[in-house]
Length: 395
Image (cartoon, helix red, strand yellow):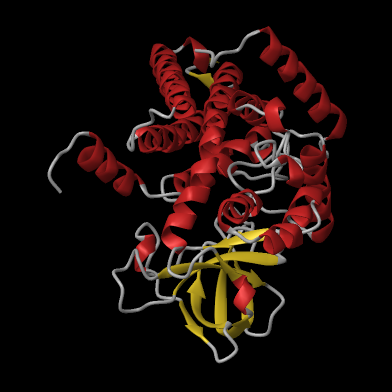
């Protein structure tokens, strides 16, 4: 199912594809949302992000005075860019630059926009998202990090954040903290900018079972922020965060591209390994599973592009995104699990091991796939939203 892909958009697609081929850094792809493994790799990725912004392939929906494309921008073009980046398996920086940029544009001051937006567009500044906490992952509104007003009008921050992607590379953080402990939990939260080099900011990378450190825990111990660190009105952080998260929705099309790639790679794997002395692809049970996965990916494609169409018309439903997120994340786990089953003993080998299947691709995808069922709202939370808000079932 195509999303309004006429000749103009197809020409734009070819333009984006050629740009990616000519400019994307040669960094081996990995499963999921990953950080650079070293400083040199991080510099390459940020330089690449700067090129995408400069070419207008990112940040096109920004106001023109900040570098946006004005009338040349369309949400359809955003979808095309996301699809082509996914198709090329090109590096993509998983920071909070896009989130904070929309928070600043929609709610920040002119001074904040002039100060921070150029660094995002150029790839000079790295941002991280300081939302989740150990006791408030899916229930973000229950966060406990405190921001207390100081005598000079600034804020003193104390608390802990966790699952902070790229926190160890970040120059700035997009922070949610409680500024009114007596208000209802959604009402007493404010959004603030944190300079990650300030005294009292302690970033500790978390080593994951994939062998890499993509997430971090961040401790904030009496961190002093100036008054102009506040984004928007005091105690309006919940609405600011939700507004900025809306801009992630055009990226959902990339999930379809990634899963179709996985189906293709899984089919190749089934041709190369053997069951009972013949290629596994000839086994009826394997064919049935591949057919099931293919049908589910195409069903997800129909759902995703229908969701994007409703979003572009302003007729979206609250359960649209949770349905797609739930389907994508659960399907990814099943595809990776089946790939390891087909791989047999070689499935336990990782990147660099002699005999590793697809250089450890399926081991990496299997270890990472479960993270998608948690990140951005767990599968349990997604089911609750679908049931309660979409189907109007009782709590």
